Length: 252
Image (cartoon, rainbow, N blue to C red):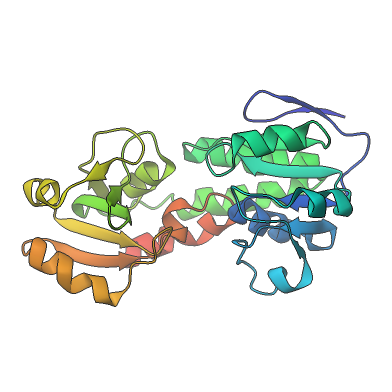
């Protein structure tokens, strides 16, 4: 069957894939939730959900660097990746040898389409529709507005989530007004944060692992802001993890 991925690349599969490699942690979790764990042969070292997966599957590298010889030994009949998370040069090298499906996620609608297409690729259409329905239903009840925010993804340098990101969409869903009007992930200085003076400064658990020890520094920098550690997976992991996001946003 012929498929078109979210980069508008054409893909041909002669049969449903039985040896899948996932190079994106959130999409690895989606495959498991679609009932495809037995078909997964390779994952990245960052594929931490479910926890046992890295012990039972072959590690093929990270999301940017790949162990090509290990991938060759696994003989995959499908590799799935993502434009933002994966290295373009490595992906192009792998796509010359193996069927490759790529996602490109900026919105919840993109996410629903990704889940739907992965379900079609793997003949799990019913299961994928169930996941989509659960996510949509969880967001049907409006989430109260909370105030302005800045969302940190890295420390030293301070990097934040701006416009044209999936995190920005999820911040809006969570009831926050993102004060960063620059695209993607700009770097800010401490003086920039003081000037913005947001109602909330959100310190994400990933990719930089902000911890309790960072709270005092930012509280001193922004005495009028509420400084919160937040679960970055529930703001940035598209796929089936979003089933849990709306309830988490309501509790924040």
